[in-house]
Picture 1 (cartoon, rainbow, N blue to C red):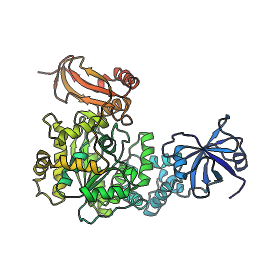
Picture 2 (cartoon, helix red, strand yellow; picture 1 turned 30 degrees about the vertical axis):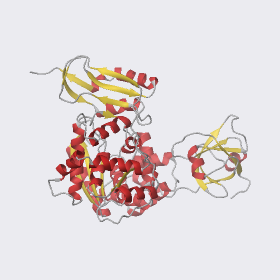
Picture 3 (tube, rainbow, N blue to C red; picture 1 turned 60 degrees about the vertical axis):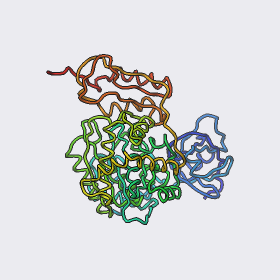
Picture 4 (tube, helix red, strand yellow; picture 1 turned 180 degrees about the horizontal axis):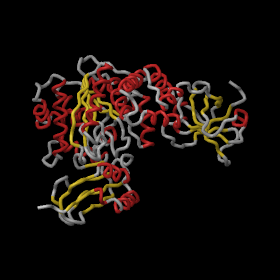
Length: 503
């Protein structure tokens, strides 16, 4: 290390998500002597630690010639302190990028090349540009089933892996694309009430207005450490935690960030993402819900079957039992779309309220029933009714509240204070709702970042609609976001279709 190539660190409070960025004056001695260019990857080292970061050059005077600014991600990873001395050097080329280039040109991934790529990603050696190249190489159906299995195994190996005493550890997942389909908290409560273990790690939203972790966070903390998660499961038999906080599949969390930025879903990456976290969490029996609909993530039964086969095959390769079920993906589930609104629906079901959304309850009972059967707590065909009993006798609610308290305390979800009711401008039959449109509208309102933002649905497909009838209510946490969403809505009313009824 060249002892002359040092600068004093400064925290510049710039959020670059998970990518570490270092800011240098383009005319500072380190940039000139080392020939660092904008977007160069450099090693930043202090006396205690080193990281790889991306260079951004500064052209005005807000940074001195003796300083290097660190983004929030870089500051956190380096554990830096203000004014600390840091040394800068070039990084070696990331050798596994040759495998990514090979994949782009048609060479299949092997166990060894997948492991090399994922290990380097997990170590922070890939820039966002390189990550985008890898995500693109794996997008669509570009991975065969053995490549998916290799990628999944590699993602498991670079993270933590939990082990449990029980021989049956239950889990479930929904492939997504269906706003409001927040069955997980209900299912976890029922399964845990039955005596089965279900250490549920969930993701935050990728391209949707709410992930399970976002919704659960409106009711209880989800950023649990690995030890805290183990304690909650030991105490209550289950948890609902954010997977990113326990590093069960750290490479997947990095890839999800890039997929979100590209608004890109990959069939193979989806399988690897889901099952790597299930295996890492110690799950032995996993049920995957695959909604099918014209505007859902999975649009045909043929694709759903191909995805189901891939999930089962990968599960077998990694030594876990994976079952799948197909469900209706033609419209949002429940009434709420957005973290707090979906949490409200979850609580209505668990509290056995008469006005609880029946479609959400039915889906949760079906999934919980299947898991009770897979876990040996219910005879084949009887799981659904047994699951219903746990709702009706209050045991599921009691267990859910206990899980919330164990995770740090329960709180009621709070809805956004700025609202607008959208009403029908014509009479007829409601024949079509675009799930992607509803999700985008909720995101424009601020979800999931603003937990109280989203939509409250008042009608369902097939209903007769009258002029002036409320269709849905918009919720936002600021007037500006509500106005922005209303402007978008003016240009896209055809995504919510009311047609003349044919007698």
